[in-house]
Length: 427
Image 1 (tube, rainbow, N blue to C red):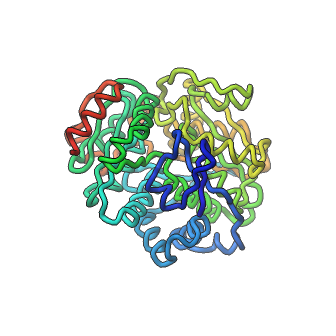
Image 2: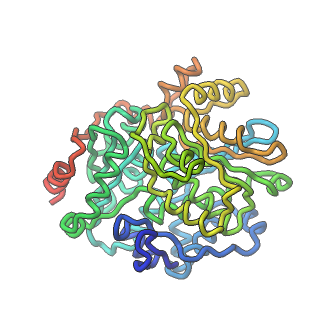
């Protein structure tokens, strides 16, 4: 697998190099130079999830990883179910929250941990990542107590749910957390500054576990195939998928799946009030506003890192522009949709409700629709209970985490303070 830095086309790397490097020169993201179609997708869809996923990843990555090794990695990483729930006659919800931290990011986090474990050969690695909610927990649990690995997680103080926060700030050990005074974009900016600092990169063996890391992205491609595998065969021909979008990695993975042969006709990338992409699609002007807090906090992102990857697939014609939709959903409409979906017997937290609204607005009436549930409703217990007026039972993993002490340290959005803190902690 050859990948190119989308900000510096002279930098071309292998999959292994891209995983170990994380972010390219000039803060550019890596992307495959060639996406080829799979053979016999129908036969693939008949396979079990892990077996199929190993074949998809082998197709994407190429011969860098022995087939048996990759198969074992995928079996360990994807050892939990994906569920497709029928919500009404033509619409389904793809539930991606049945992993250990109850969010879709378990797929990418666990596969990345497998890759780092294989590639680092006992060398020191420091994973530095920002989280707007679920990345922190998925990465922390995936790398917890892994030898030769430290994880540093930055999150915006007071701007993620308590359940999300406690899942990663209570672990300790090799997991080091900082509550940053600011927004997710401020946290992400600190991460980017660290990757421009040669001293930090050399001393700490720096890597990132945000969706900028290609190992996370390719792992996410796999569950879109599982979504169609669980559909009745007669409904697979014209599928519209709606993805709640913050950093745009998830919809990027869906687009890759379509390009390599998954029969998805249209995609919706739906945002909350942080509507940089919908405005860009409408006007052609890239003009991020200040990040606005919302009920769907994991999508409170104004400068999505993965947009260059999506843009490259649209610009190249690999995915047709007229089949790609992006719209924003207001706070009031988010709450209204949560109530409407609950009236049909399905409990949707805010991100899932936003994806449902995109499907409602964009999907042709005769198409099959799939909207994504990226996190368990209990991770947003307070807001879901307040909107729906019904009790949400906590899964045991969340109940246990909420009873533990938060170990995160407070910090301003100042790079020199971050650098001093992690040097003091890790060196």
